[in-house]
Image 1: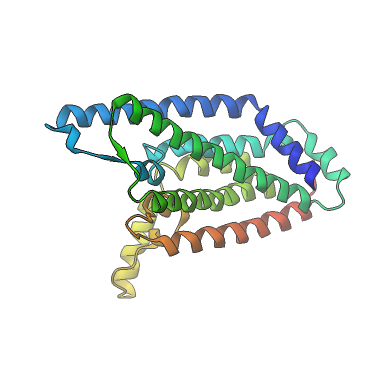
Image 2 (image 1 turned 90 degrees about the horizontal axis):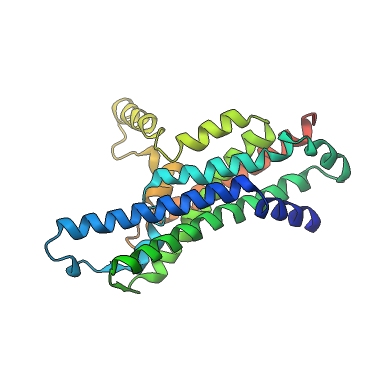
Amino acid sequence: MSNLIKMELYKLRTSKLFIILLSIFAVVNIVSSFGTSMLVNAIVKNPEAIKGDLSSMFVSPFVLEMLMLFTFVSLVSFLYLDFNNGYIKNLAGQVPNRGYIVFSKFIVVAVHNLIYFLVAVLTCFISGLITGINMDIQNLGAGIATFFIKWLLSLGIGAILMFFAVGLKSKSFALILGVMIPVGAFSLIYMGIDTAVKNFLKIKGFALGNFMPDSLIGSVNAVKGTLVANGIISAVVCIVLFYILTYITFNKRDIK
């Protein structure tokens, strides 16, 4: 098991696509952060009065939520790497249980996403230093808690993508999901369901997005105490459910 995990981590750090996409993301995120700061300085009469709270960099490390598509596109491409080069067939024949492969890949999903989240925070911090925004450590603990809840939600989404990419061997569909999720494509569906529930079931205040990982990853906020429990529960449910589904389908499917 440990050798499988080490091998997956080695493939990740030597993946040219992973390095390229991560580099592009870092540049785009820091430019977006820098541009936002400059725009605030240009519009606000007294920009010094706006105090940059260090916790905000952990709460919203991705300056634009849609930039998270770099994370998921990179993830799907990496998960499908063994299928592209045909190595998965040899690998599946050398392990006593295919579940080891699924587990090792999920561990790398966690590491992969954490790297993106850490780079996002780092680029925001660098931008803050360049623009001279004053930063304090107020609510830093809650900001870091939000960071890890969002990372956990990204693992829930990663488990869903792994199910399609590894369990069902559908790279195209996984990539489509990886792009649709960060751009908020499912928000319209949630709004439609919310309207139907309110009109037909007469349930007021129902919001499906408050229970879905793709929506929660942008709205959960431990600093404000917003949807924290929802975020943790949604992440855990998605991780457990889709990990099990991937395990079952991958074990039953013929490896070619």
